[in-house]
Length: 338
Image (cartoon, rainbow, N blue to C red; front, side, top):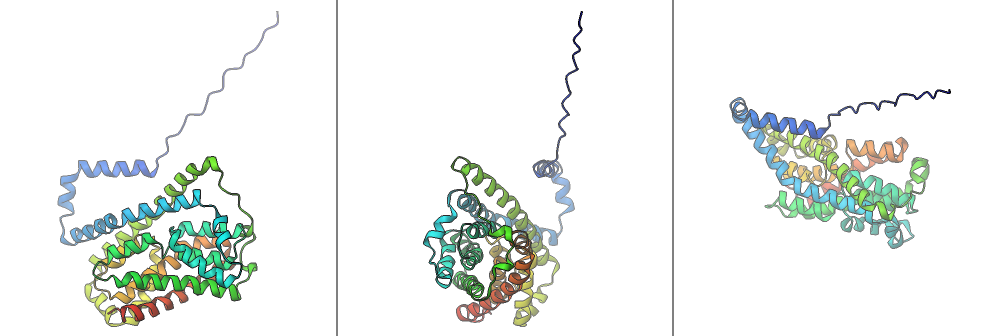
């Protein structure tokens, strides 16, 4: 009689529980609730109270604009095909730069989202000069950023116009410079390949994933920026900012470098700048124009998307152009911004 051997069923590997940021946040909130009275005693220090007030104020004011910005960014990635801009852009690179700059007003997005959008535009055949202009304009001159700036500077509405002029000038000047002297050899070959369009059935999934990813990334930079703003208000003596205010050239350079290092989201940076009450308006304007144009995270994104050869040329020139356009805009519109 033939026996049939049956192998034992394979055991499925046990699923390992992974700790994500959600679990960490819930644990922190639980500890804060249970130890509320103890925490109040420990942190009942005037400096810490001041810092926590600044931190909460910056986050609460900026968060609605950040959420709105990432929702719009996700909608653009999912529902606005790159060929739409391709059809409306003129064939001449110089004219296309102007149209692409103004398109940034109608198609808002944060800095992180503008890099892949520009990559998609180039992949769809749009002139690189126009795509790079849109890359710089979209996160800096869109309605969400301008309204956020108006809310952050209620007593200085001219800051909105100065930021718009300086940022739009930065984007268009960089586009024209690329149209005249830029070379395709500087852009990595992978960035020039044609990208597939988002499929109709997966658009809502693309929208949700893009918005979630942008919110997590930009939200992290917002919290970091709010913490640094709070620390600067507490740890840095007010007279230091007074010195920077008196030395306007030094103040402008420091705020420009600070914008590159902090790498804040454009929907939230106005509230961080406004929290530095001892600084004059002109250095704050430089901070708002330079940040969305070039910072450390943008340099990393541009390197990964367009290649090192592109980023090493594009980033330094963008910094100089943004700084110059901000100063010119500030002198003309703010009158020096004292």
